[in-house]
Image (cartoon, rainbow, N blue to C red; front, side, top):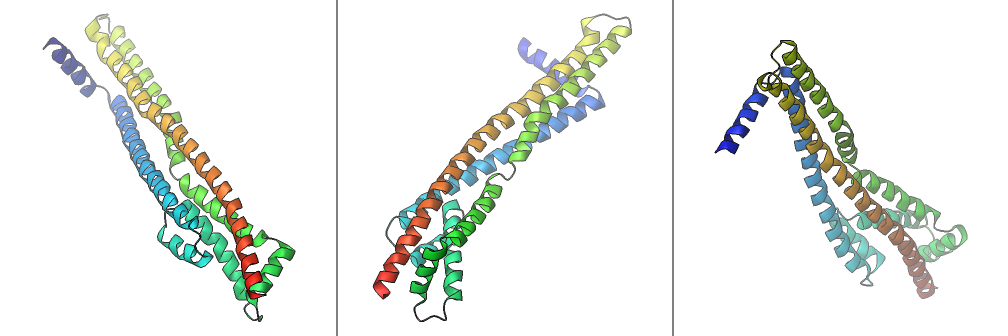
Length: 241
C-alpha cells in the first residue's frame, strides 16, 4: 500500500510538471511508439521475404525452365531473389525481342552473349539489387535518428527539471518538497529518453545485420543465375543447331 502511494505521488508530480517537460515527455513517448511501429513492420517484412525466398528457391532449384520460373516469380512479389530473377530474365527477353527477326533467335542470342558477355543481364540484376536494397532500408534511418536524438531530448528535459529544482531552492525552502518535483521531472525525462533510444539502436543494428545477410544472398544468387542463363542458352543452341 505504501509503495502504491509513493508511485501515485510521483505520478502526480509528473502531471504537475512544467509545460516544457510535459512536451519533452510527450515527444519521447511518441518517438518510442513510432519506433516500435517501425520494428513491427520490419519484422513482418523480413519474415515474409524469408518465406517467399524459400518458396522461390524451391522452384528455382526444381529444374524448371527459365520461363516457368519467371511466371512463378511474378507471384512471389515480396521475394527479393524473385525480383532479381525477373530483372535478369527481362534483360534476356529484351535481347531476344531485338533478335526476333533472325531465323534462329536463340542461337543468335547465345552467340551474341558469347561474344559480348552477360553485361546487359548483369546490369539488370544490379538494378534490381539497388531497388531491393532501398526497399530493405526503408525506415531504418528513422530508427537511427530516434536512437541518436532521443537521449539528447531526454537530457534537455533533465536539465530543465534540474533548473526547476534550483528554482525551488532559490525560494529559500531547501526541503525535499521544494526540490522533489524538479528531480522527478529530470529523472523521468532521462528514463523515457533511454527507453526510446535503446530499443531503436538495438533493432537498427539487428535489421542492418539482416540486410547484410540478404545482400550476401543476392550476390550469391546473381552469380548462380548468370551461370544458369549460360547453361540454358548453351542447351538451346545445341538442341536447335
